[in-house]
Amino acid sequence: MNFNDGMLKEGTLSGKNILITGGGTGLGRAMGEYFLELGAHLVITSRKLDVLQKAAKEMMDSKGGKVVPLACDVRHIDQVEEMWMEATRQMGQIHVVLNNAAGNFISPTERLSANAFNTILDIVLKGTSQLTLTAGKDWISKQQGGTFLNIVTTYAWTGSAYVVPSAAAKAGVLAMTRSLAVEWAKYGIRSNAIAPGPFPTEGAWSRLLPGNLAQQFDPSKKVPVGRVGDHQELANLAAYLVSDFSSFVNGEVVTIDGGEWLKGAGEFNNLDQIPQELWDMMEASRNKKS
Ligand code: HXC
Ligand code: NAP
Image (cartoon, rainbow, N blue to C red; front, top):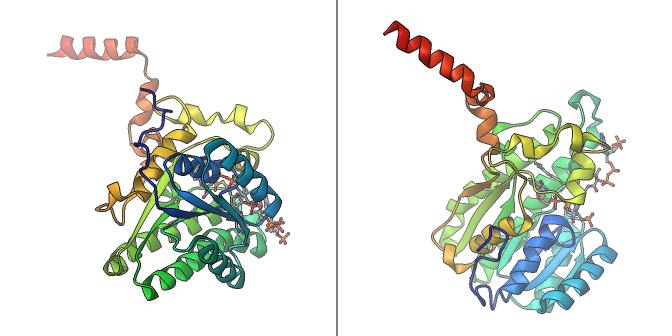
C-alpha cells in the first residue's frame, strides 16, 4: 500500500454527478480522474473549451464514465447560470460542486493595478460565490440537497505576502464554506474545504515559481515530511469529502500539506538547524551545573 494508491473502494461515487470548475487541468483534473475511477460522472468547466474537450476525451478514454466539457468564465453570473442549466440538462441532477478554479500570481502588492487585484478576487471569491449561489438555490428549490467542496490554501488563515489578492479571496471562500455549512445544512447541503500545501502543477508553478525560482525556493524544503504532495493524495481526500462516507463532516477545512504551515508558525521550529553536537554540549553544561 502506497500513499499514491487510490484509497476508496470501487463504486464509492457511483450514481454521483460531480461538477468541477477548472476540471481540465492540474489538480481539478487529477481529482476528476479519481472520481471517474470511483464511478462518478463529471461536468468539467473553465474558460478554455478546447482544453476541456481534449481533457474530457482523454479522461473518458483512460478512466471510462461520462465527462461533459462546458465553457464558463466563473466571473460572469450569466455564464455561470447558463452553464449550470446546461449541466443539469445534460446530466439531470448534479450532486456535488467542486469549486477548484483559481487565478494567482506573485507580485509586491504595491505594484498591482486595481484591475490585477480585482481579477484574482473575481475568479476566486466572486467565481466561487456565484456558482455556490446558483447551485445552492437550485438544490434548495428542488429539495434535493448537495455537497460543496472548496479548494482553498493554508494562507487563507495565515495570510501570505506577495499573493495578497489570492490570500484575501481564499479567506473569503473559507468563511463562506463555514457559514453555509451551518445555514444550508437544513436543506441537506454540506460544505467543506481542502487546504493543500505545495502540489506541483503547470498552472501554479509557472505563475508562483516562474523562471528558476523553483530551484531557488524549492517548496519541498519548507515541508517537514520533506517532499511536495502527490496528486493522488489530494484526490483520495477529495473523494472522501464528496462521498457519502463523510456525511457527518460539515464546515471542516482539511489541511494536506505535510505540516508546512505549522512549520512556519511555531516559535522554535527553526531550532531543527541546531546540530546534535550543540545539543550535546548544552546537555553536558547543564549536567555540570546540577
Ligand atoms: C502583476 C499581473 C500579472 C502578474 C496579470 N496581471 N499577471 N499583475 N503580476 N504576474 C494583471 C494584468 O496586467 C491586468 O491588469 C490584470 O492582472 C488582468 O490580467 P489579464 O491577463 O488580462 O487577465 P486574464 O486573462 O483574465 O488572466 C487571469 C490571470 C491568469 C490570473 C492573470 O494568470 C490566469 O488565467 N490564471 C488562471 C490559472 C491560475 O492562475 N492558476 C494558478 C492557481 S495556483 P491591468 O491593470 O494591466 O489591466 C494557486 C495556488 C495557491 O492558486 C497556493 C499555492 C501554495
Ligand atoms: P491550474 O491548473 O492553473 O488550475 C486553475 C484552473 O482554473 C484552470 O483549469 C483554469 O482553466 C481555471 N480558471 C481560471 N480562471 C477561471 C475563470 N475565470 N473561470 C473558470 N475557470 C477558470 O492550477 P492548480 O494548481 O491545479 O490549482 C487548482 C486549485 O488548487 C486552485 O484553487 C488553487 O488555488 C488550489 N491550490 C493549488 C496548490 C498547488 O500547489 N498547486 C496549492 C494550494 C491550492 P481556464 O484557464 O481554462 O479557465
